[in-house]
Structure formats: C-alpha cells, structure tokens
Length: 402
Image 1: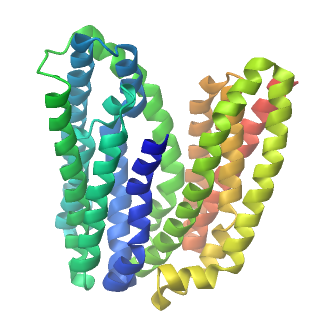
Image 2 (image 1 turned 90 degrees about the horizontal axis):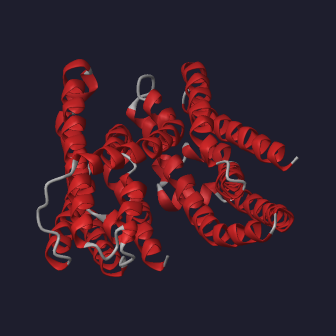
C-alpha cells in the first residue's frame, strides 16, 4: 500500500505541484490548449491500458512462482498493449484528417500522445502481481520528480507548450523502458510465444474493466472535451485550472479514505450483514461530515487557492471553483456506495451498468447546457453525473439491504 501510495504521488501529486509554475509560464491561453490536448489523449490512454492493470495483475498473482506461466501472461499483455497502442495511433491519425483543431496542433498532439509509449511498456501490473512494488515505485517517483524539475526550469513562456508536453511524455517513457528491461533481466522473463487460450482469456477478463473505466473517465472529462467546441483557449484554461485543483483535493481526501475503509468494511460484512451494515452507516456519517468540512474550506478559501496555484491571471476561476467545491462530497459519497456498498453486498456486477447510465446522463446534460452556460454548463454536467451515481448505487444498496 505504501509503494502504491508513492506511485500515486508520482502520477498525480507531482503534476499538480508543478501547475503553479506551468500556468504562470504558459498563460491561460496556452495552458488551456495543452490541457485540452491532454484531455483528448487521455481517451487513447484508456484504450492502451484496457483494464490490464487489474486483469493482468490478477493473472500474474495466480501464477506466482511459475516462471513459464508468468512469461505467457507477461508477453500476452505486452502484445495486446502494443497492438492497442498502434490502434490508438491510427485513431489519432484519423483525427488529423477529419478534425481541423488536431491538424492545427498536430505537433502538440504527437508530443502528448508519446506518453502512451510509457504506459505501454511500464509493467506496473507485473510488480503488483508479484507484490514487489517498492523498487519501481521509488524509481518511478525519482524520474517523475526529475521530470517535474525539468519542466519548472525549462518551461519559461507561452511558446514552450510543446516542450512541456514532451518533457512529461519523456519522463513516462524513461520509467516504462527501464522497468520493462528490468523485469525481463531480473525476473528471467525471456521471450515466450503467446498462447491463444491465454490471449483470449486475458482479453475477455480485461474488457468489462476497460468499459467501466471508460464510462467513469468519459463522465468526468466529457465536460472539457465538449467545451472545446464552443469555448476559446482562455476559458478552457480557466476550466482546466479549477478542475485540476478540485481533483487534487478529491485524490487527497478520497484515496486514503477508500483504501483504509475497504479492508475493514470487508471484514465486518464477512462477520455478519448486521455488523457490516452498522459499520457502513457509521462510516458514512463520519466520511460525509469530513467531506462537508473539506467542501466548506474549498468554497471559502477559493480566492487564496486560485491565487496560489494559478496566479492572478486565473482569478476568473474562483466562481467556478466555488461551484465545484461540492464535488469532493459527491465523489466521496458515491465512492462509499459503489466501492464500499456494492462490493460489500457483492453487487459489483451492476457497476458497469451504473457507469454507463451515469455517462449517458452526463453527456446529455453537458450537450444541453454547455452552449448556454459555457464552463458552468460543463461543471454542472459533471455534478449531476455524480449525483446520479449516488442515487443509482445508493438505491441499489438500500434495496439489497431491505
């Protein structure tokens, strides 16, 4: 858990910490443009990962100690990720032909897309499966930290937007390449032809995870994606800045709560349904109160937070950040019902259906409101989506309880 926590810090905290330097160097217009490009590339990253972070981890864990089976799983996963990387690149090439914005910023899109080389090569699923994350987590943190330092030093003005994207991608590629070579040499994972049976099984188990991840990512990022067709880069920068700040708070608050509660919740429900339900209700009360307090802090401290993280050029983001300040509460309560509630009652099979429904609601609301309300329409679509997730998953949990 500590190693995974360090990995999360490297992947999420470091990019957030360099935001104050990046936005001041690039300005609202360039920052909005690169944020929008990163948002588009994120959909291709989901395709490259395709749920292997869970399915391949489980497969490696089940064959721990069997080198031949580990080879089969390792090279099957790499084979599929390379294939999906090629497909994602072809999709990007199609965008260059059909989308004027992609044509105009083709170099920036390529620089941002290169990050997927790192995601393709980095076998974090292998280290999780054999439960040896320590070394890779430390090295990953070091590389990302050095990459962040390079961004702070080298990105100086709004013409360095390409350099910013390239440096981020190169840091991921460096980590992925090192880890890939390290696994092959240290764990004796020589080349092994992929068995068709293992390929089909692994791909089949990855598909539901991929779909669930896709649904969640779409309803959390669709606002910015659709906003790009109506707003200018400055508005995109304001929305991106407020969104990155609020998500940083969510990660800071929700990740420790979810990670620490889940084992205890599972244990209580294994003892008895009554003990589990009692613990769930008490946890919900305390978590909700803590989330409300956090939301209050964000609402009243919004001018200070925006000034500190984004600078005076982004003060227009203060009303939007206040509007989004309720988001940590909605996400944490939704997480309580989905992760703690549905999984505890063994209702996780319904999670993809809930995710799909919430995604459709988010898309409809966003498409309806963005042309009228702009950045607040995009924010409203996200908030309503989270509220819908609470209603759907909460209703399912309570109906199962009855």
